[in-house]
Amino acid sequence: MTAARATPILETADVRRTFQVSAGFLKPRRALHAVNGVSLRLAKGEVLGLVGESGCGKSTLARMLLGLLPPSSGDILISGQPVSSLDRKAVARRIQPIFQDPYSSLNPRKTIADIIALPLKVHRVGAAAEWPAKVREMMDLVGLPHRYVGNYPSQLSGGQRQRVAIARALIMRPEVVICDEPTSALDVSVQSQILNLLLDLQRELGLTYLLISHNLAVVEHMAHRVAVMYLGRIVEEAETDRLFGDPQHPYTRALLASVLTPEPGLGVPDAHLGTAFPNPIDPPPGCTFHPRCAHAMPVCRTIAPKPLATATGHVECHLYDTEMRQAS
Image (tube, rainbow, N blue to C red):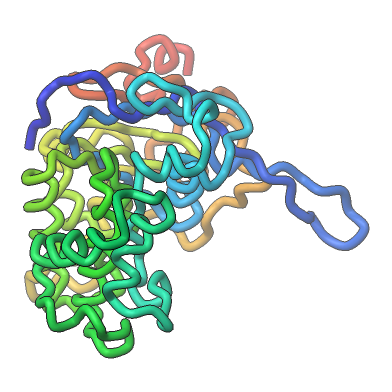
């Protein structure tokens, strides 16, 4: 898949987020760099996949993009305008989330009509008499029959609840949607329906998606580009076809090698990443991936790699830095 080149609708420039966390009883608090210098650009109408292991900083980055968490440093821009210059409501009008679990993200005491109409009420969009028609229009878009307007979330299936969540996110026609594991809580039988719905809506409404997922098959199906995150850094970014066909970073290769295959007799794949995830409070020196990397060189243990340009993105790895390889 290839997205058209355009002015970024959403951009991050060296964004960082640091938390001070407890290191133990009577010990001083220590810094946890959840997001450690991330620069991304999303063009209008593009789908950018963000992948990585749990704890790598994906959700923290998403919360900053939604305006729910301020960055410790760096800039987040919407159409060139700093998010810091906008209030929460202004950001919410332009960026909306679709969360992982459609049951916990919906108010169980509100009807489907009330849930979908809530953004219109909060932002005072139009007259209240117009809201029912807008709700029905959005239910048509996401494939929900009108007979569900008076139902409650508990009366709907998982797939139907996620359609409600999508309708609520889109009723104000945002420019960017942050999809945080939008199908992982659903039955396999309905996952493809929701993914195809998201793609149809993206094309029909001209939406821009940041798709956060552990499921590499989902990312390959939906995304134009993919960014691979490890311990708060984007270690590789490329167009989807290139990243899946010719991954550069050893971590990206390990992620792709870990995908289960339907071929009988192969068993569970071994990604050769070991069993221990590095401590984000005390990350390894140099390249943070080097303790798990089969291609680590002496230089990897002392010097952090810099981003190196590739044909469609960048990679942070000394394997592609001629100067560092010679020094090693």
